[in-house]
Image (cartoon, rainbow, N blue to C red):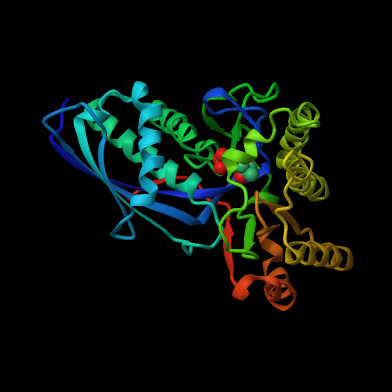
Length: 347
Ligand code: PMV
């Protein structure tokens, strides 16, 4: 089939890694497997208008962010198109208008690259499906994840499913370095509607881009041990997600977060990405957990913000604690309530 004009729109969520991806090889191949919870409320919504053009020598696109032209995102999209062209040979035949917005505040320090690259990849697959109506749903989602990976590694975990594994792992036979796959086992009910309250400690520009961060794992003195540990932690977490053991869950998740930061503290050059308030929050979470036995824990991205994870049935008490004890450590008191969600949606 050939189409002259079309318009597609997808929303894709952010995701929070439980076992972290940190370090990569050529072509966005991860140095170790990772697993994440898909979020529900933190999303990018992207509309793609396509129209056939006369010539097909170059990529041609306009980029709008919240309805206004956004020139500074263009090089990233250009690079993405160049990377995926050999898998999407039709791209140069069209002019694109990419209109994108996030449901979370612009400069919140929440990375929009995962949700943004996922939403764009879903839209490109909608175009591909329009050109080739026979392609199957499985192919559609797998290729969307494959393309998203080439945009931003962790974006491949924002396509489909509430828990997503990316990277070859011996105990997950469907896993691949090339795309994310849904966690293959039944998730224990303790994790249904699992909550993630994101405390915005520092909304500033990222001190270290993830590209630079991944590169720091080359020649890193602890790299090989770290990559092995990710495999061990994923094996252990696989059991926990099935048996619902929250004490074990907490140990793995917090250790992964601190290890990610330890890698940055022990690279050359070295970085401390936590802020004093990050540590204040961690200490208060530990104190609260010791005193109440309520199974809350934290995880971190490559920045100062803290994700507080807890089961739905303790929400009321935990939210009270967050409001009374933790919000004071957030920049302008800002935080976002989110929970585990299902992935990208056609609008
Ligand atoms: O997808 P990238 O290249 O921005 O890397 C993301 C890295 C972490 O967020 C720190 C960990 C992860 O697995 O998402």
